[in-house]
Length: 165
Image 1 (cartoon, rainbow, N blue to C red):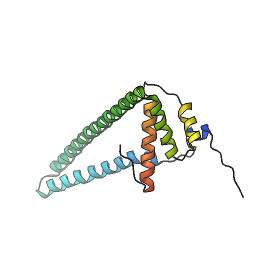
Image 2: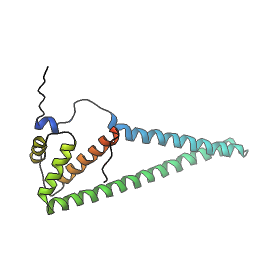
Image 3: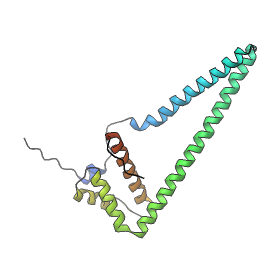
Image 4: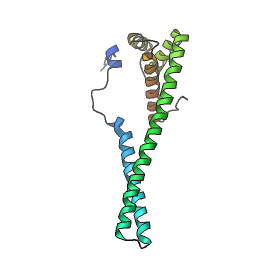
């Protein structure tokens, strides 16, 4: 039995209707690791103070101080991490904006090849990249970077070699 499967422009750019939760794994992992780190470090601190023969009040004071210090350290670490990621993403967007301004046809060809690598036929890949809004203000660069990142993640998940950044 032959089946004619056609992928339209809208099929290619539409989001999946299923409610996959894989995108939430990052914050869940961070929350679990952070909670585990806080519990282990605070309980270790309290055990150490208790082993010294300190009073119950001193043990509780050390535990509360450890919780406060751990929370501040985690908040500062998260801030630095998010700031660093934002800086890298901003630099990537600026680079793509400059590439688009310098060589629009080359950037369109790059995006077509990215969509082809994701499994779209060339004709449809050209329709997709031409059909989406494009500007030197950043929409095109964000689209290129998002598609490239998704392709890298997909390749890594499938065990295929991952292209360098």
